[in-house]
Amino acid sequence: MASTYGAAQVLVASNRGPVSYEVRDDGSLHARRGGGGLVSGLSAIGPDAGALWVCSALGDGDREAVRRGVGEDGVRMLDIPADVHADAYNGIANSVLWFVHHMLYQTPLEPVFDAEFRRQWASYEAYNRAFAEALAGEAAEGAAVIVQDYHLVLVPGMLRELRPDLLIGHFSHTPWAPPEYFRMLPDDIGRAVLRGMLGADRLGFLTRRWADAFTACCEAFAGGLGDTRIGVHGLGADADFLRRRSHEADVEERMAALRAEIGEGRRAIVRVDRTELSKNIVRGLLAYRALLAGRPEWRERVVHVAFAYPSRQDLAVYRDYTAEVQRLAREINSEFGTPGWNPVVLHVKDDFARSLAAYRLADVALVNPIRDGMNLVAKEVPVVSDEGCALVLSREAGAYEEMGEDAVVVNPYDIEGTADALHRALTMPSGERAERTKRLAAAATALPPAQWFLGQLTALTGQGS
Image 1 (cartoon, one colour):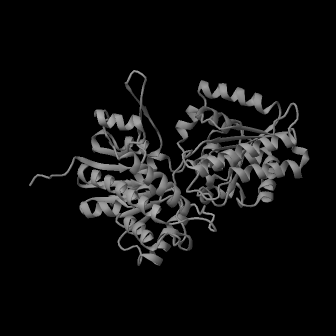
Image 2 (cartoon, one colour):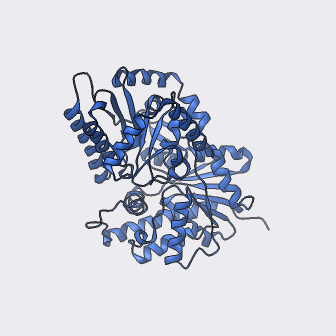
Image 3 (cartoon, helix red, strand yellow):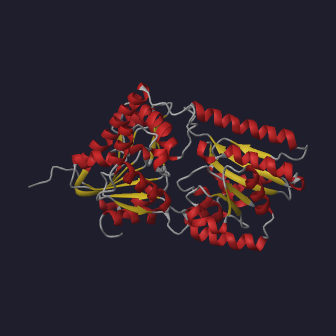
């Protein structure tokens, strides 16, 4: 009997897809392709594997492309109503699930799980259902489906009900909250999240710590894992791409501009982050101020190059955080600056070439998140550093499991401790710094993006652990 199912043998589902569209002034659509581990992984499968990427239309250009029937081979973009997507993405995924897993709530005041939360949760369910139905319709019999991240935690369970024949995986790019924090969610919502995830045959996490936290939540609130398998895949940096891209002409131009901003003979403490609450940019600036206050010998000898690129600016708490980063940078420059020295060089406009230039110039990289699934910046800087770079790394970053031995490790809440770590990193002998950088780069590139994705796929289909 002929199958009534679609033709795709390998499917990926994620909120953001590999392509986005904008409508130009003349009404034409312009496509922009992205990169990253999933793009590399699907490319590595090969064109004859019947791969399909299911994603959401994120803006007016994407929705117009769907309406016009414009698309790319191997991509299906879902035109989920804008209000439903906003509720699911901003209301639940980014304002509830992200906050729970990164343990960001100011608990005397938040969260408040009221009628508005329930309304937004219904949208989150509808958003996940749209993905599950699309995947069910597109997947060939027995196909492998790998669902991505906290936006789509309900999809595995929904898809299992629609298509029990499929091999279903899910990968979490965030930390997972321990049971005592996860239980902050209303009981029925917490159970729904776990039940959705446990619809998968196999779940992937970036570190053993996050996998163990999920397992503990299941044991506490869902009666255990059942038949669902757990795996760990620590996403690494794409060394070939980074090394090639970091020596292109636009990066060289930005290096010259940054050198001029830093000043001749000065050391550079570099951070590159989105203004995401979990990245801990404000405490990083406070630690740098403590360094200058407590160790005046560094005044006029060091510059903190801080790239804080806007993130989720449609949420008020993120706008406020970005404003606080800018205010504190101005305050440090006012307090310590001299006519020939700005202690903080802050840029808030996203510029990848400038980020790579900063990586190459960095004497010290500051990566001090409150909590982070992995943190690729910690892995990228050692790969492209020209002279070797000391890494000041939070013990709460997922990257700590792989790189902590050769980093200067900090408690991200300890301002004085971080200031001391910056001093230690700045005074590290050049030979030691170079050797540490080599070992950090080796650890950072142990599982490149294509291998990271293919490892999940082979494990899901029974060809691996």
